[in-house]
Length: 131
Image (tube, rainbow, N blue to C red; front, side):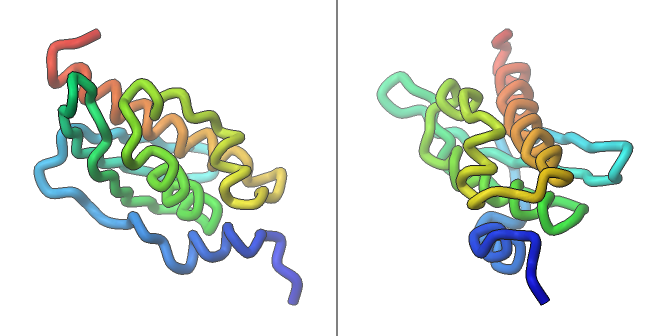
């Protein structure tokens, strides 16, 4: 049977490296899609280094389809080690490209993962008195 998913997307779905919960995270981004039912939580741990705020660790908990899990894992891969500013600059297309493409009807999952990361950064700023 031919898969509609790339080898990379299947790998991130079947063997996600960043699935889990960070105990005592610095921030959490929670997003969902009421149409398809996908729900994502992105947890970040931030390290201050040389005046920069770096995503030291990032994990996700996702209830959703293969694309939702794969995009959650990929956003973690792309954001880990980046400054908060660099992380919010990640585009949904970067996620899709990292997964070697997605079926057109599943592109919305990359938007959801991207928004989850942005919500986590927003939560971090709110917890630390920033706008």
